[in-house]
Length: 494
Image (cartoon, rainbow, N blue to C red):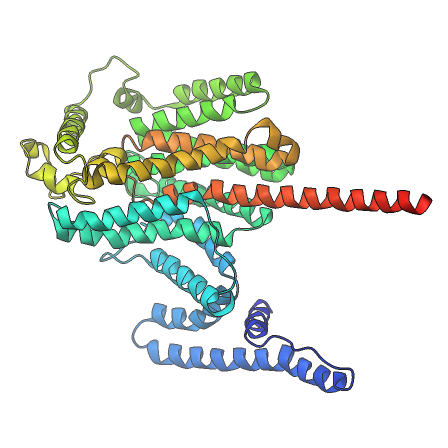
């Protein structure tokens, strides 16, 4: 039934219903029956027949490929008709994209590419006349991308910079899809729920993974520090959903997911992650109306977190006087050299930098190269340092502008003025401010410019702006209609 509706939706967009005169109404009603019922059903049958035939041929190659070919056609029709549904799927799988990557190929990343491709086709075929969302951030992002492209010509390793540009474009694309496809409050809240549930599923995997029992917790992301920072923005967003949702079962589910994610962050032993989530929780409490109560709740969360924190994690994050292990000392020393060498690079190449993602190659050639313990080149473990050394001031300024405009918008819509317009959207805005603030702090401890979570968070304040403006226009139109109605009544009485 859903597939049939999707085909009908596509065909109605391709062949819009023409105006019908009274004399031809009976003829058109018969054609309309064929148009709305038989033709979509025939299209579905033909496509399914082709899919079954393809799966029959491909089953000898791989049963998985055969099943995928069977589902590909109906999935394509559905995603082409409803790209917003595909985007919600992408949001859900954001923290799972690195799961089960074999030979550099991720099936979940392929799903994201398919969703984005269908969204582009939907726009080119059906919505070319609809204007795309305009925001000040868009210009800054385009400028940042142009500077990144230009940095190839001054890069210390042009091949590495060129290889990173497609990756940067892929993650930035999520931002543009989010601001153009999420236009209703219902879809906005569903997106936030799926963002939270995806993080919960990612966390659950870590608890059932035998390889993580005796080591640092990393969920389904494969890296403890990355896991901690990726989960951090979900905590204040979960608190916002907890406040606006009045359903007891859903609120209970939020509390359970919230506790699970926080415990996972604690087990990750990420110092940067713990600092980030602490800041996010404090920011959320400060932005609430009853901030004293919320500061008390946050203090209780901190106290419980310290009680349940394992001893080895306390040692790692410096909460005990026990001497740190040599591995931890080496890690701290190595990261200190990143900051020192990064500052030197920025001073030497202040204007245009050494090429996007050039820090790792430059560090490997520096006097600090003896601290590299693996065959992989060491990134700066600091997003701001990566951008500053890679693209110089001309890239760092628009990048900081993108971050600043996003958190300013989120803060703007969390103010008292907008609580009267929509308490739900204002509450979510407080969660976004806390999520962005915590993530920005975490970027001091990791290179996150290629993380889709970052660009998804940067898009949410723009969506909030669209929803707030829609609310204000609706309210204004309602007031005008009411005033006109009042004036009409008064004039009639006279």
